[in-house]
Length: 470
Image (cartoon, rainbow, N blue to C red; front, side):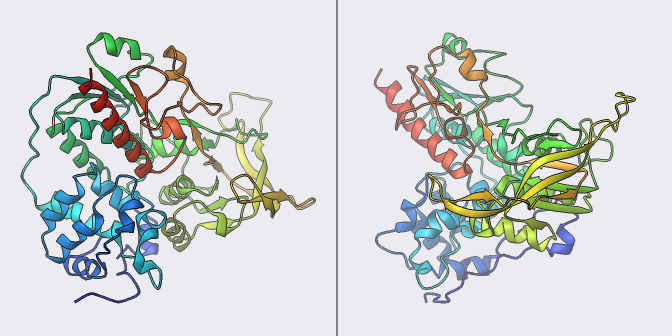
C-alpha cells in the first residue's frame, strides 16, 4: 500500500540542549521500519524527475523500490552504480534543492525523504556487509588524481571500476579533502569518510598523502612518471576576506582555518598541537553552510555566545534550511540585515610582545536594507546611513567564501584560469592542457559536495574515452 501521508517521516536528532555541548552526530538516522514507511511514499513515477535533479544521476526510484522490498543490500548496489560516496551524500547533500525539489510528492506536500533513505541504506551496508569490494582486472593504464575531496574520490572510484591504476595525491596527511577538514564531526563523522576511502582502496585506488602538487611534484612530472591523464580536484582552499580594518587582529580567523584546526588538527582537545581560541563571544560573518558549521563548532568549543552576522534577510540565507534550523535551536543568534565595517581591537603599543597585543574586542556593523536585484536576481543589500552599532566580541570568523589556490596555476604551464582563479574547462572537464582535466571547487569555486562529485564523474568518463581512443 502506498503511504499517502503528505509529510515525510521526521529525522530523529539529539536534543538541542544536549548536542550543543558535544561533537556527536546531530541526526540519528531512520530505523528500518521508518525507512520502509518512507519508501512507500514514493509513487515510482515513470518520468523519474528526481533522477534528473541528481548531479550523479542515482537511479532513485529503483533503490527506493528495493527498500520497499526490504532488500537493503540491493538498494546499496543500485546507488553505487553511479555514486562512490553514498554515506556522505546522504548526510551533506542539499537534496531539498536537487532531487527532492523535483519529487512529485512535493507538489501537494513534502517530497520523499530521498537523502534520508540514501543515508539509511549506506549505514545499513556499512554496519552489516562484511564482503569487501573486488578490484576489477587492471587495464594497463595509469591516471593521476590531484586532491582527495569529493570530486577527486569520485573520479578515482569511477576509473578504478574500469580497471585503471589510479593514484590520488593529497596535500594533507589524511584523505578526504573538505569532507575531513571542512565539515564538522557532528554533521559528518570522520569514520564515515574513512569507510568510503577504504572502499576505494579496496578497488585498487592508491592514496598518497603529504604530496603537494606544484611543490613536491608538478603536473608535468606526473606525465613523466607514466600517468596518461591527470584530474585536478584540488578544491578551493584560499579564503576570502572583506578587506575591512582590523582583519589582522589576533582572534580573527577564516572559517577555513578555524574548521581545519578543529576538525583535522583536533584543536578541541585540552592540549592540542594547533590550538584555537575557545570560549568568549564569537561572531561568524556569512550565511552559507560553512558559516553554520563554524558557528556551531564555536558553540561546542565552549563559546558563551555565538552570532551569525549576515547582510541579507533570512529568506536569502544560502545555507540549508535544516542547518539554519539546527543552529537556531542550539541558541545561535542571527543578526540579519547587518554588515561589518570594522573589527575593533585592543592594542598595547607600549609592549608589542604582549600576547594580548592586537586582540579582537568587538565588531562595528551597519544595518542594511534590501534594494534592487543584483545580477544573480537577489536583492542587493544597501547600508542604512547612521545605523552603525558595535557588538562586543572575542573572536571573529570570516565565512564569506573561498577561491582556488593559485599554486597549480602558477606551476603548470598552459593551464588557463578565469578572473576568480577557477580552472577553465569544457563540458567534459578538459582544461587548456591536453590530457589534463579538472572539476569541483577548483573550477567553480566553493560549491556543494554533490556538484563536485558530478564533475568528477563527467571527467572520469571523458578520461576513459580519451585513453581508450589513443
